[in-house]
Length: 317
Image 1 (tube, rainbow, N blue to C red):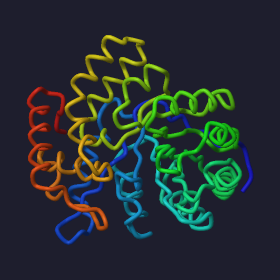
Image 2 (image 1 turned 90 degrees about the horizontal axis):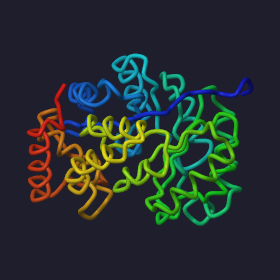
Image 3 (image 1 turned 90 degrees about the vertical axis):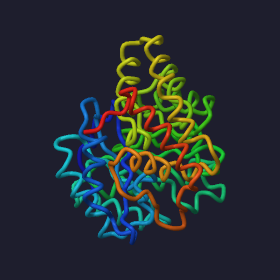
Image 4 (image 1 turned 135 degrees about the horizontal axis):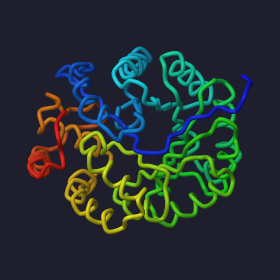
């Protein structure tokens, strides 16, 4: 496709929504509507991201991905809606991105294809060709999902800089999971294209990432505690380090409860455990191959979430 450069302002707080299932592992649409009321329709939320890791996008059928986008679009009003593209090939990514565009997504978030995990992400050739091909095939902008460096799928600063120069790339969800990589990537991207938004998303590093510099926040944890992330972002906008530290202290118990225990891949299921403890959803189980959270961790997470609710840092819609 051809045309003017695609634009979308993604500065601010973007919530990556979790997706609840019922006892038979079909999508619980009533529960999902309550999730959206809790985290996506709050004041201070700039955009909503669906069908990513938090939303178990890799386990969904085309019909389910389409339904998640259309239902979310109808629920959240004018907020930008981002859709995850989790594919194993460029052709599949293009197909998913076209489906997302047709369903009403305003931005396609490109996860690195699994074949790039064999070392192809170490140089810019394959990732740049992948992003360029998908962006050229759709009329909506794209965002890049940066994986942790240790995964073998994280892009280098040079690769991200080349990607940022592609027409249609508007943001990078920065999840490198080291502060050095975050800073080097941020600097490289901003030098290549200052208009590309850097959205911190590094588990334990929200405060230091914003202190270094960022254009917003993007996290699945916002599904559970949206108010705290809005406060952290507002303090960052005000360059108020004291206020940022104060919010971070209130956020810390939740961060450790969700991200602390191994394996880290259970983090989004733990968020659903927290939402169940709050009465937002009825079932926290994920789709296989992910596993339910063990009973001892469920109790620890629930206790932390209830304590945070009592302090007023979690407010139900």
